[in-house]
Length: 242
Image 1 (tube, one colour):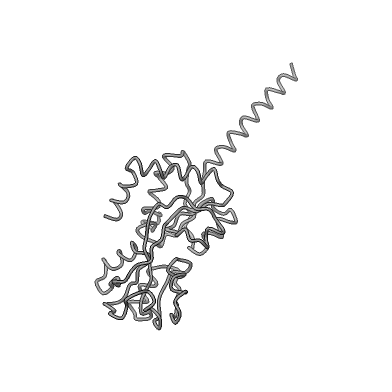
Image 2: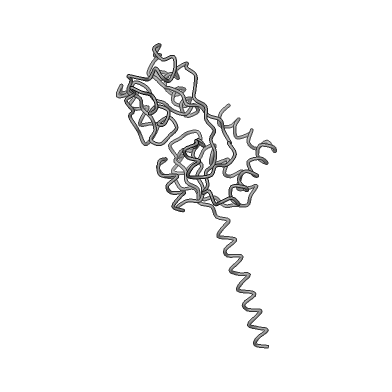
């Protein structure tokens, strides 16, 4: 009888441990950078935006609970690799260089790199025409990579896009390279800034996870497919970009 009771107790403990582990695994810590409206930004000390609502939709499809942590953009992938967070969503481009370190979901947004100037700069016909100019970029963003590859550009790196725009307004830089949607927000709110009429550099935003987290990646990709199929994705696009 004691032996049977012991076996029952061990079985019960095993179930409890299993349930606890499963419950723990359902909580996913997400790194973001709330300096990138309309994708993620602070509103009354809360992180909101397109990416955050996309997370909510993914949560409904997967049953996963996402806990968002705001941090510096250039610290996001190191935080992912050191397991301080489990995934990253931050308007992040799935570049070949980043793919060497982490795995990316299917793209969820096609973006462009654009040039913002103070007033119209007729000398700009392409990104290469930034040579000889002082250009503001966001540290670690795609614009940083794009501009750094142009010979003759003096690159000024900022931790937040508003700081780069402020520098432009004060004539401390000649131009700012930024993702198209945040750029539209700045130019819409201040008529002194314009987006240069030059061909834009295109990129795909995706969600980053560790390379060995295939189960999580599969859940995210499946959820993205369902969200796009059931109309939820289009609703978010309409809310934030149309």
